[in-house]
Image (cartoon, rainbow, N blue to C red; front, side, top):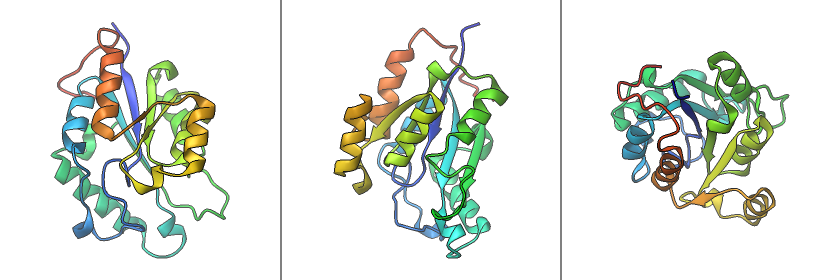
Length: 194
């Protein structure tokens, strides 16, 4: 049997609009093309969500609010949480010791070990340097999406150049490129059995 690929996905600025410290499900807005992109991706990849939520560590909102926003996102995507092989909400304040807060690779490394993933067939897609650095540290491939204002910084551009990372306009372009690369190399699973 051919191996399955995996996508580790940032949330804010990659799948949904980054409104800053999002805690109200009513404010969740999908980015254009995100729903179709993830429906495509789940045909050939295990999906994982990895989101930094420092608003929890800062005391602006709690884990329950972050989870409610995730549920609203899944609803808008037309997907179920169970269609993701794993979800990690990293609540740490940037000044706190970090376990899962990107750029820590810990969550990705744990999922690679738990699900016996092949790092060469794993990608992280995000809009910030912390997303890209997380992937580089984990030994998987990092992809920048540029639809967020956070993606348009000199610091990110320099990091992309230094590490020769691919960059795409949005999640749909990134998923299409990964799909083309994987064509014939992985087992498709249209029923998305995790």
